Amino acid sequence: MRTPYRVLICDLRSDQLLDVLPLWDVSFDEFLGKTGTLSAAVRLTDRQLAARARESLIPGRTALWVERGADLWWGGILWTTHRSSDARGYSALQLQAATWDSYLARRMLYDSQIATGIDQFDIVRDLIDYAAAQPGGDIGIEYDTALSGVTRDRSYSRFDLPIIRDLIDQLAKVENGFEWRITSNRDPATGRRIKLLQFGSPVIRAGARDIVMTHPGPILSYAWPTDATGQANAWQSRGSSTNRNQTVASTPLMSQLLDYPDDVAAGWPRLDGSSDYTTVEVQETLDAHARADAAARLRPASVPEITVRLDGQITPALLGATIRVRITDLWWPEGMTGRYRIVGWSVTPPQRGRPESAKLLLEAA
Image 1: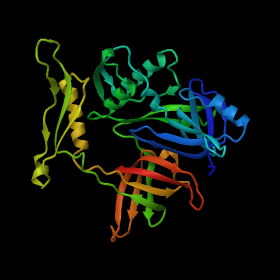
Image 2: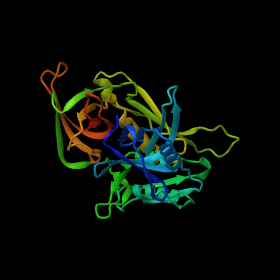
Image 3: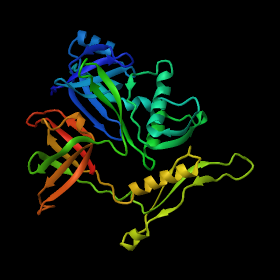
């Protein structure tokens, strides 16, 4: 079914508009801490349309911007296409794209970098500047100059061939870290499309007041998973080997062993966990990673999902907003009220007999 969205096809580096083709079965999502995706199809109904698609939809160098009305809802890079034709002669081009941060997962650090006493936001900006400074490496990521107030010492070796996206994620997930994303915005004065780096310390927050949704009511359905398979109340992280003498047995740097005796006293069994940071050579840095990882794994993971009708309350700016959820059903006959932060959303286009809807991913606020 054709969707109410308009997809602009642009050159990735210059953002020059190449074409606007009719797309079908469009679905897309965006998350905090995870790359968002888009899938769609071009129905190749005639030779002219096929020629336009062949010329403009080139994986790896094409940008896609999704408009809903006058607003930009999604932006990213076309990475794969798949052309198919069936026995009846029906021909289509399937598209798969990912948000702008996916570009940084395809960029590497070929020169060693050292940061001493630098704000963690500026370390990220320096990495993005490095990527943009290489020939063909500037895709137009913009940023402001706000600081987190947390300084770091970091040394990145070119011999590790590190991926820039991995370096940013690792820096973000350390104790007193941050969240980051690259948003798709439009300049209200000029209408220019903008790829803007957004930070949140320690997390990204949006909206001045809570959104309230209920089930039964605006919440059409929900899923409430609880997963203890990664839970741990004893934790140790492993770093790089600091031994440079190849004639001596090599042992890696280890963080302090973290445990929670109060957790065991409360009835929980001992659950062990670990993480690896093969490029970390500083004890203080490794210990900070271990503390952050241990705190994140102390309780079962739960990422509730609610599906709601797409109305005026639901916009792309909701990532990081706070929502108050009220549910009354067989599981919660007396009613449950919880306060959560929206950390992801995905849009489902309208289908026959089914309205357009959005799935919101939540975490405890």
